[in-house]
Length: 191
Ligand code: 5GP
Image (cartoon, protein in one colour):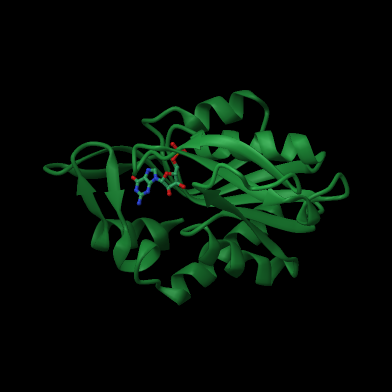
């Protein structure tokens, strides 16, 4: 998506070789018009999949998921990241590992909000190694809900999460795929 690639080129900040900071429009300050266009694009890509619910992960997936949900006219459920050991029995839970924070956490979703009747689009801001996505797959499996696709704002194509998920036959659509980046040469997008 050219609009997003242009925004990343203009306002994104490459940290080292593997972190892209997009606080200027996505992860801290939010460019609402850009996110609206992204929501519209996710709808175009997945509108024929019978989606009845969008699932995301707190916190940075929520804004994108909400914008997309307006077009699909469906609710958003966001998985919570819990550091509590005792979260009760009324939740689906899975272990994950945060790429940016470098630590493990438990992802939880109340059993009230996911069931085998759901056709899910999972949306997130970044796809790197796929840890968040694999925890979501685990939760969906527990709930019996059907994953219809994964919509990602920015995929770092040089990490292997996207490859692994596509090899499983999952429909993964990323609005921008970064093939390489560094602080000197900048960012190269996949065509
Ligand atoms: P994964 O679980 O696929 O390894 O990493 C994806 C998650 O880590 C996303 O939910 C996102 O919050 C965070 N993340 C991974 N890489 C980056 C990055 O380069 N920049 C930012 N801002 N977040 C990232």
